[in-house]
Length: 290
Ligand code: C5P
Image (cartoon, rainbow, N blue to C red; front, side, top):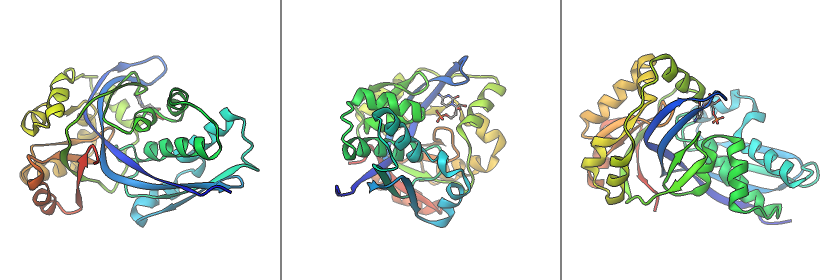
């Protein structure tokens, strides 16, 4: 029996998220800069019979996961997808997955997708499937739109519905993350964008240039999220959190991905702790993680 594999699954923020339009398959074409940050789940994958999943973490964080259909958990979906592709009978050659959650659930930080990406890589090793990166990316896209970006592990510009990837360079920048105690589904966030007039922001050139140098002033002036207006219109409490982070000294504050987690950019790493202290429940992260 092989030793269990233990890896970190880093969450992400979308430094900009531009929605280009709704497609015939119901998804939306997007352009986005996905930046992994130093907030992570810990995923342990070991051999077992059948596919089993154990979740650990603060009860408030786990409650929505426990209420959801366990078969729909992206870590298990990833394991089933890989097993099917590799022709593995999981009744005999299965896996036990243990996840310590720290990334907000259904919060717009791709925690579930990050866990799924780690499971795909770990089981590829444990089951000796021998799939290369290209094949894993293809399988990841079947599991969820955010999984390919999370498989790359570094800052990446995404297009299509999230599966077209261009790795980029990003100087580490300091962020403050504030999760909220409710969930927004990605399907709702994208539907609200359709319903509210389908407006697209500018191309992300200014964001990419600022991220390369880590110039927080120009980065703060260029970040945006096209999904944000629809979320703020339906959840005004999100705007209150954003305003509190700005009042605390953030360079910019906005919703990450499909929300509702709010992220704020600190002018400099020396200011990040002070901003977080002024907004209870927020945490400081660095993106990309060291
Ligand atoms: O791919 P994933 O299962 O994470 O997507 C969840 C839902 O989010 C999709 O069913 C779709 O409604 C919406 N979505 C979208 N466009 C994307 C990604 C997600 O409309 N690029």
